[in-house]
Each structure stands twice: as C-alpha cells, then as structure tokens.
Image 1: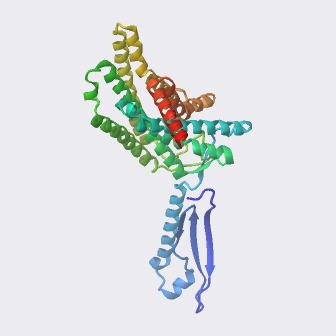
Image 2: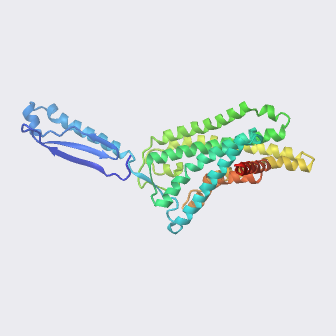
Image 3: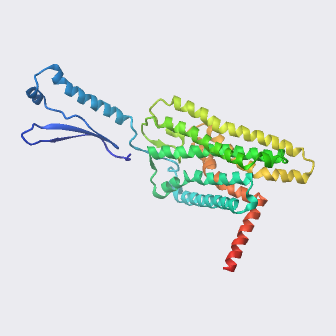
Length: 386
C-alpha cells in the first residue's frame, strides 16, 4: 500500500501492425490495485467482423462497463491513503521538549526492565514464583512500550505523522494483545500475593512451577485470542477521509470513527471482549486485595503486619496506576474539551506505568535492592581482579 499515491483511470492507445484499427485499453490504478479492463473495440470493427445483432453489439460494452463498475466499487472501499496521527501536533513549540522527554522515558523503561529480568535470571534468591511473574511483567513492559514510543519518537523527530492503514492495524493488534495480557498478569500476581499472605503454609505446594507456567500461558493466550478477533473484524472495514486520528497511537476508538462501514458489530464484540479482558482481571485483583487486607488486619503483631503489607505494597501501587488510568480513559467522555485529558490518561498506562514498574519494585522491595547490591559487588570484584 503506497501512501499518497494518485488514483484514477488513464487511457492508453496504440496501433498494431497489419493496419489493425486503434484499440483503447483502460488501466485502473489505485494505490496497489491495478487492473486491466477488456479493450474497447470500435463499433465499426465489430460490425465488420460479426453480423449485426443485439448480442454482438452490446455484450462487449456491457462486460466493459461491468468490470469498470466493479473496480470502481473496490477502489472506493479500499483505504489507499495514510492515517495521520495528530497526537501532539498542535504543540509545535514543544516538539523538541517532548522528543527529549519521551526519549529519556524510553531509555529508563528499557534499562529498568532489562535490569529486573537480569536480576531474576542471575540471582538464585529471586527465583521464586513472585519474581518469576515480575520478570514476565518486565518482559511484557519492554514489548508494550516498544509498540508505541518508537513511532511517537519518529514523528516528533521528523514531523512525519503518517502511518499506513496496515501499519496502524498492526500497531493496535500488538498494543491490544500486550495490554490485555498485562491485565491478566497483574491479576495472577495479586492471586500469588493472596496465597502467600493468606495461606503461607501451603503457598509453596499450591503455587508450584507447573501452575506458574500455565498461568503465564493462559494470560498470553487470552490476550491473543480476544484481540485477534477484534482486529479480524476491523480489517473488514472500509475507511473514509479525512484519515486523521486524534491520538498519538492507533487506538481502536479513534480509528473506528474514520470507518464508513457499519461498525455496530465491531463495537459490540469489542465491548464484550474488552470487558472480559479488563473488568474480569480487575475484579479478581480487587477481591484478592480485599482478602489480603482483611487478613493483614487480623495479624496481632505490628512487625508481622508491616512485613506482610510490604510484600504486596509495590504490586498494589502498580495495579492502582495501571487499572486506574486504563479505566479512566474509557470513563472520561470523549469530547473536544476533554481530548487533552484523555491523552494524558492514555500516557499513564501506555508510557509512564512501564517506566514506573521497575522503579517501584526496586525502591520499595528489600530483596530486589539487595540483589542489585550483590550484582554490583560481583561486577566490581570481577573488574578488580581482571
């Protein structure tokens, strides 16, 4: 698909050898669609080569008109232009500042999450179910932020905000899969904390490596299945101008606004699947923490109460940031006056939360801080002896 490519019909004529009469051939080009129609044979040629009859006289012109009509319908229903991600385009004086800000955020996000993954893999003290889920969350955050920030940085750097229709659908697909998977993974992590605090004697036997593996697989498969269905329906839509998306990435709602097809089925299916992917894990997380807090208040020792709460406080902050901003995006009315507020809430769960996760877990978790110190001391000792 080529963006901005001219479309229309062009007519070419030529003369063959042996005094063949002029025959016109029509070539339709629209984006990547190119089709040749049957040549228009002059009426005098038809009369000379075939006896005059209504069938011989009109069939060729009827076929030609039919092909022309079908190609025109197809090209009218095919999005050959580009979507324009308006994003922060209305703030030209802040483009350089936004570029530097998002670049720093991206570097911190990648470095922090890579560090957490490395610590979980290298340090044997962190090879428990809690940190196994944390390592998977960091891996997911790296992929999650990489679907949005590199494209945003490119737009701020070059000023080119165009994105092909296929590219837009691909970006939304990976964004949707990763966002849905994160919802399920956060719910799994809250369930893990519930077992650790409310049933500490049976925690090791209940949350074994086999269950951890299948919980991770189930989270990814749930996100893949629901978003594959949504994007499959979205690919069947036709899009009309002006091809401008009022967002900094290809979210579903602003893309559907550009469709000239009937989007009722897509909206219904999306609402059902998005509710399952968001509200289901959110309710499971909420119930888990209600039971956790209730159990913590039953502990008589103040020291044990603080220790129990410290094991889940980091995860509770991450859950609050992610689900709070995600739900706020869809609760805030999508009006022109609240458009900027809608983008700010979107920034929280797409950009800021992936950056904040490793910082929250490293600053509020003693085991992670101790693992960092051990890793630094090992690197220092190796460098000293080398």
